Image (cartoon, rainbow, N blue to C red; front, side, top):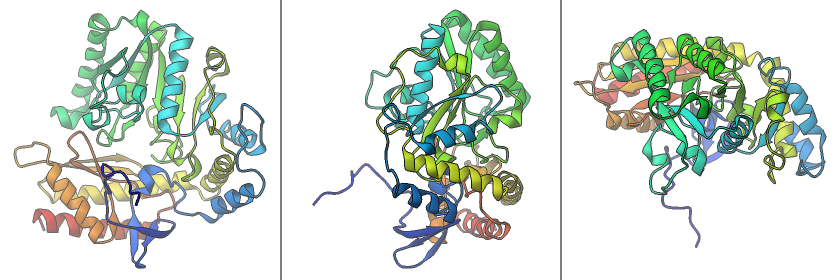
Length: 419
């Protein structure tokens, strides 16, 4: 009898029968409040009626039309609609299936467009699991260990993770930019550097927001040296942070934006966006793929954009995000074992530490497991898996946030003994 790979481990014991909005229902009928959202994918909640209807209608017309062979209406409509929400000047799109594919497409584009070999990424960043994307990932060795040699040409600079360094944010930012300049002097000349790849908020790296000064520093150096700034919005995009794009919090201009996860409410679809001029510098034949721009996924993505607009989900993410962050901070203030609580919009992380300030992955994972037993599904992240993250769908209500916070407070108290 065939089985799933034994290496695939479930974060929760739930076997799902169906989902609706912010809830999952298991095969025994028990309801679970889902604050994982498929790792930020089900942006409009589980099985939003308008997304379901769009996908069903499209399935009856065309399931797949390979888009370098034939063109189809959902892809053309999605491209036009994305033009309404993309950052100014980013008017050309290439579609793929996954975040990793988007990262690799952007890597290829930036190297071809600049004629330069090297890439700079930032400590704690996650960009995917395929070979090139894993080579660019530093959020944990579990994503890149055991299949060396990895891709060459990747250099790593610090990210302003103030809590990790034990500094204030200004000091951490000055350090990160100073070390970036040192990297230019010692490892990769600016004239050989094609691009910076950066997340507006570290995802797998621990839910650490960037800041305006840091991203402005990257933009200045990019402009000075002809380096392209690639902003990885795979987890932070599509309203997740309370702005449509995470980088909007920091007033920075990207050259390339990477899109996936919440784009199609759970259907596999990703994209890279750049200016027409930049995209035109990709070499002929360098962009393609069998399933990219799938018709059903594109129809679901158009419906997702409709729902986000019509239900004011970006605004809801901002309001519910403040509510969630304030509640999580209140729990953190009463819990010595929680060293830091941070977030943007509906991305909130609580970092667990031991009494001497070291990462406490054991307690974080015990809290995550206990919360699941109490009906709240969460995930961990961070290099030491000591950050518990909350990622509810954009449709989450005030009452559901209160419900989650009540379970969270009870869970943290029961595991840590801090009432």
